[in-house]
Length: 448
Image 1 (cartoon, rainbow, N blue to C red):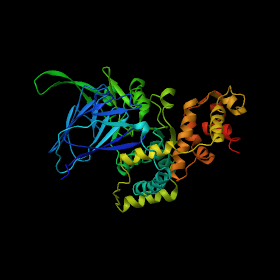
Image 2 (image 1 turned 90 degrees about the horizontal axis):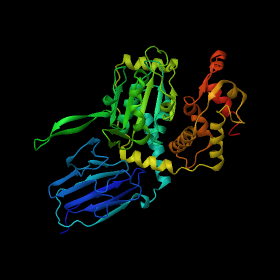
Image 3 (image 1 turned 30 degrees about the horizontal axis):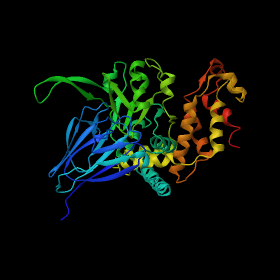
Image 4 (image 1 turned 60 degrees about the horizontal axis):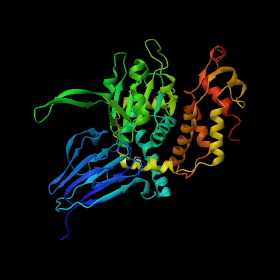
């Protein structure tokens, strides 16, 4: 009779995966040649001997072997944790492991396994695109059970998640910004955290802190208690109400997907998306986001008032006390697979040139910049804007089931990508010129 085994599925940050069937025993996971599960390729955040997986006849357990980037199970940082069927383990920034336990597992020896994410099999891009298009339709249907209208906002936030980006939502109170983000987390089965930014909020309130703890042997030591940033979809509510030093606590997390506390790095497992909100009306007691942090946001989305019909629908739902429960459309594994598929969307050479020209046209010193840009712009968009345009266009094409992006995709997101990356001078304010008008002038001759 064949011995029962534990199935371990390893997935890298690009969504590529491989499955191993392991018999009971001990398996050291890391980059070292002496590890039973040796990961090769670009796994920089995985330590040489990162963790040990214990597989027993009655279950499994994982322990951290003093790694520098930590060990997470189902989004929680752990040192030593018993595992259940379906648990997701995050090792460093690049390696995820899902455990499938049988009813019983027996065995003795531990064969050596190799996983090289760079050599994992390529995904079926056409099948993935069909899945993304279907999932996008279902996502809109579920979100609209709670949110009336705001189609373009929903599309851009979903595109940012697919493109591993972040969003800045700007709108007056009462436009369902918080409800929109929390609903997306429900539909996508993402771990959700909400931080209300206030003047007295400290960086440790976001990242977490070291606390004094007594271990099982009675020894006192410091243990890291993770903060609300250890989520997959983070709502930073009214981010401009907290001082710059607290706003800056998000910088490393948004760019490197990790945080540093007391010289130790802690990885934020993918997917990770920050959606920050701002109120454009009240400016007293606020702290404008520094340009460096604004540039970390893929999109700046302006939420407008609902139309008359949409507002009537909102009131009708309230009067009827209609409260819809949403159903799950996707999970973390599917989102990672979709993100990898977006990376494979084709970008024609002429479109890359058009994106570069669009970004360069916002810089007043560029010879091809229009007169309006030279007159009212102090500084234009940097290279990260072109990256956001390219990635966002890929995401929109994937959402529509298309294998290649086009100028219509770029044109759709050019304002959300550029509007928070331009600095207008006093002449713009004196003449009443808006940043969106400047962007229209910059890109009007492109994509013809």
